[in-house]
Length: 121
Ligand SMILES: [Zn+2]
Image (cartoon, rainbow, N blue to C red; front, side):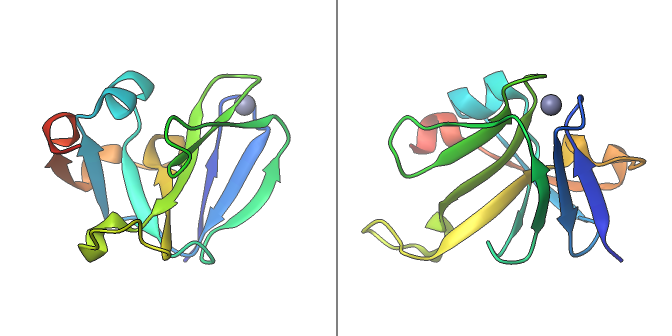
């Protein structure tokens, strides 16, 4: 069953192919400050239904942190799939949805894995 994620103002609406069951909480400085709680999908799986005020923040150019420039919510990210263990920048991408944007969803139902991004990269 699909699920819908929306930013606070509704400008960003994303359809996910399912309801996430797992998420990652990362301690890196970006994730800590943005408050993102991420579930991952192949980049072609989610459908971006609207991104009216969509903006992108990127420090390195590899990780694209999307957010709503109207309401300020961190919405989704697209980054190289570093989980493949490549030493070079992987060509394969992955999509990260901020699960905090899911409507009518109990965040406590997620199995959350913490990654120590602050010390890993
Ligand atoms: Zn918004």
